[in-house]
Figure 1 (tube, rainbow, N blue to C red):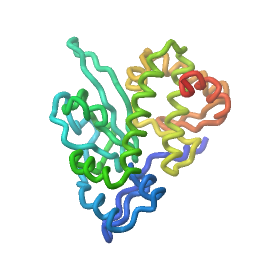
Figure 2 (figure 1 turned 180 degrees about the vertical axis):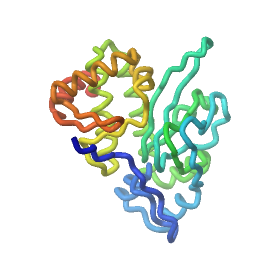
Figure 3 (figure 1 turned 90 degrees about the vertical axis):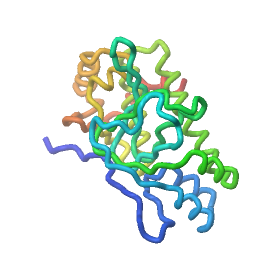
Length: 248
């Protein structure tokens, strides 16, 4: 069986004239749609600080660190998590290239969770005070921030509902596929930078349940699995299973 095409993004920002952004930039679609001119784009570009690489297992920030900046993933993948008093980890979310990490720290002004690289990852770091000031002159930039925050809160609340394990896994795969597709990658390929156990912690399921459901989906012809790469064969049926969560 030939290996699956990997959906792992490797795009980085163009360091050229200072007006080009990576294809996976968290703000590129807003800037392009709004038709901002070069001086306005330069104002955004000069506040970008490229940081990394952070290797797998390294912290980008920790719980209660002061919030001063947002991190836009350039390449790699990140998980956010909390650790309870017993030392048990609860995964809150996963972040892919083109997505912002740290939006949930805006109100408390301290990060309410840890952010850990799942694989070698690089970031654009934006001073939040600077980008907030710029957003008053770039309404589409502000709207993009609101959309990202709304999406993050919405997914968390939908997963908190009473849904079956099959529905949760189907929604997880469908959501990842849609997010990869939004960055220009083939919609049917999903790269799982996270482990089965991390997926289980995020979906509030047992690790064995994740493996069993992925195996059943494979046997039913819904997906094809090659290590951490998944090819979605029957997106229609996966969408049917995921509908109550993603449309909630």
